[in-house]
Length: 225
Image (tube, rainbow, N blue to C red):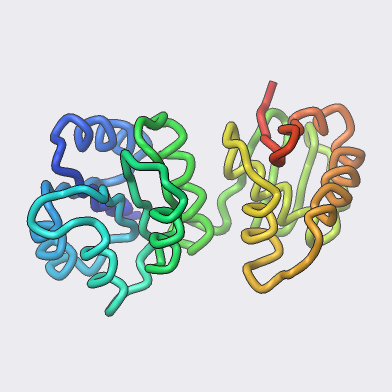
């Protein structure tokens, strides 16, 4: 299988190298651009780019302009990097079709985890891949979960919820984010729905239910002990 291509756009060479090193270690192929204009040239030249990691503040066309232009012709996933963490910037990003929004400084491991989660979501990574997390085995193609080799029965939403947690290990996930990704953006329900499903899921996972940790006032984090 050909390596999945990711375009990293940032005017700081040190930042590009940091991101590139971590992504290449995970088996991705990385293309680099130091400004927005160069990024668009690469984007138009290479139709196999699976995801774009895009800095906001850049010369010769900033990240917002790049995002607008890309969205005119493509739905390729975009992760926006910014030194600013103002809410209006984040809202502007989502309005423009940004898939994820990460403020600097950030953990490269978390960035890689989010890249992997997004690519799984858009099926750029093999959907038949089995996810292993601390003795929990999740086969997405077969819709099957095993704990230490023994199959357990989960409802459709419990399976989706567990898969989302496992694909985002170590990342604190708000209830809103979980609703948006597991119940989809058109779900206008109560966040307590998540708490109910988490309670049932923990029960079915037995001791491994402790991997799902409550972040008080926010949501949950899946972390293998």
